[in-house]
Image 1 (tube, rainbow over the protein chains, first blue to last red):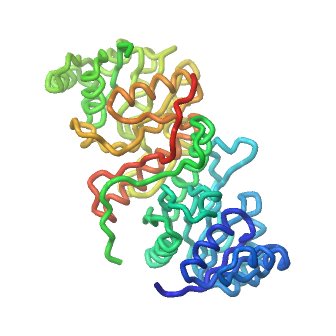
Image 2 (image 1 turned 180 degrees about the vertical axis):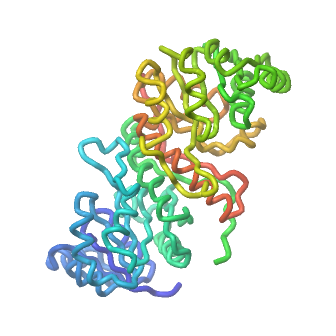
Length: 218
Length: 218
């Protein structure tokens, strides 16, 4: 594995902290960001594994790959915070466009997906990838095996491959899902999974791709 | 199992014929429809299991539950054909909004989903459900076990339950996926699965929901 500098913007949240911990444990150099540097530092110390805490902007500046893990309502403001620091980098948007209170209902944004919205907000100067939409944060926060694939979307195949590798490093299975526009499928599926959790009393339903997948040549 | 009268509109197509055969084999009374009554009769005889063949309009008139299995490009014209015969019935739309040549790219219609489009075209007088978006037709045409869940969407819970039972009768696992609007998730996932089939050389990738699902009380 090549050690990479990974920034987790919004890394004090449940999903961000869980991704940070798993990637740092796997040997990556991880910085978590928050609006407050103090909160980020405190959370980083709790997570351990050499994780550092900074402001979102500083974290984004420090990372070669910048993973954004904030609620949909905070997506626009957060991307504006990091925009000056991500030119030429891979930005991994994990945003699921949940619109409370109807989080069990698919409500995709006018751009078609939160990922397409992120690309619009950050412009073409970043290489946009999206992933980690369907995995339950409270499971990712543990060391247990998780029965959920990570579908990875993006128009740049090499960038997508880098994020598939990160998902694998986090102990999940990353699966190429195609163009960034295809992110709509995984984003929408999260509302379906929330509905299934409620309807079938499941603790964190997930999604797995079936069939014998042969690793593609890059 | 309660024997039901099931119409498969577009039932000479691959998906329709496969669903017809599995439901008839399970003991349901199945009529397949086609634009041509002759084609429908010929296909019905080949399928066996007492399946009948009629025009789409006649089939829709004969069915208590009407399953529509036509390509996206034929959805509007086909729904117009059956509209006079489906008032008060459960209509199951299976349409995946693939837009050739880019079938590996998610391109949801302006209504948000093909299912919402079907509801708009048929009006509120029918009980709309959507299902069978992700299962590979060539696998469904066999008797083999298929590793793919059938996500079932609809705003009417009882109608959704009836279709979950049909999926189960067809030897698959039907899973309640929530509101009709949530159909976008499974419809979009089909383009992702086509991409995965190509990228990973899979013969018919599918989707399974993970987690211990406890049957809901209806």
